[in-house]
Image (cartoon, rainbow, N blue to C red):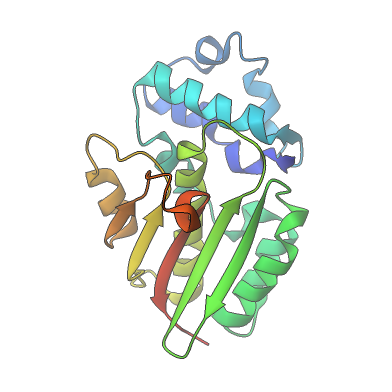
Length: 204
């Protein structure tokens, strides 16, 4: 499974802002900072998740995924993002995003569950990978940006569910999502183990 590297193009910039030389951090990973200049280049899912974990371990930045995801808007997703941004309402936009997400990302699926009062936006990794914590942070931070881009900066989810190990300090996640965050790492909670979701009021 592969994805466009678009979601990681800011990685060298984030590393520099954390006080690290991107070339030194990436040494031995098979990547050079110049690889991150073309958002349409492919990256293997397993390789991408290992790269994120490596960079987080080297920098000691547990919330690296948040720092990456917060810099993006719908344009980073290519056609799926364009459909979302130009949709007549948020419901149509999210349904288009779910339908065409594979044009950007072939290692995960996006689903939208709706009822009369709320909606559940889920991102589920279906590729075989060893480490998804930082990838899920990137993806759900981007999802929050998409929603605020469509609904306005004052929009907040009612709850965020993240299938990752609970960080030592969860304040960065609470500040970013401006909502209760539930970290799910119990393997018995299988419905959430490979997905993450926003719960929010339904809007169109």
